Image (cartoon, rainbow, N blue to C red; front, side):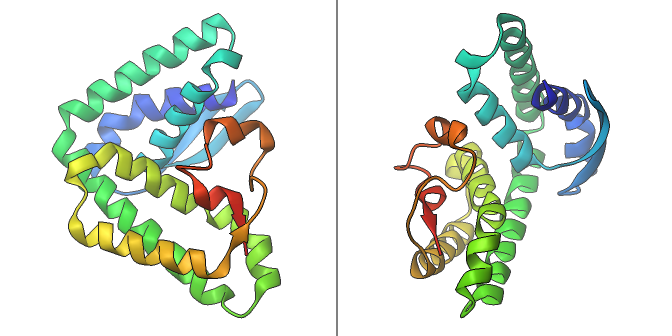
Length: 185
């Protein structure tokens, strides 16, 4: 219910978010457990949609319908402002690649710290995946190249491991596509 409330607020704000052109936007979301502040980005929105669609079969019928309606609204808004949205996503992807590089620089030679921070930091790589999927052929060659380099850096410090997040999410994130979620430093 919290994820759906967050998605609803993100979808309500999406047009304004895209037009404003800031990569991150802080939202106040009213959830069943009270109000909370949430940082919105295009990658976070795409990830939340991906995850909720992946959990579709576990949701009550009413929530499935709610998610479907929210996804259609998000897609419509993103499509109507496609060029701006894709430009914003490219900027976000660059920011997230930079964050991953800083993380990798910081933990080089400190495997204990790397292991502790990896599950949180690798969220950036997953958001990048969601962004790249949305951009498709619009993904710039420079960003593709930067992503390849950061993936090579990740591969240098990790080994195979169990799924790094809540095991209940593993079916939504298959190992073949999301290899970095099945590794640990």
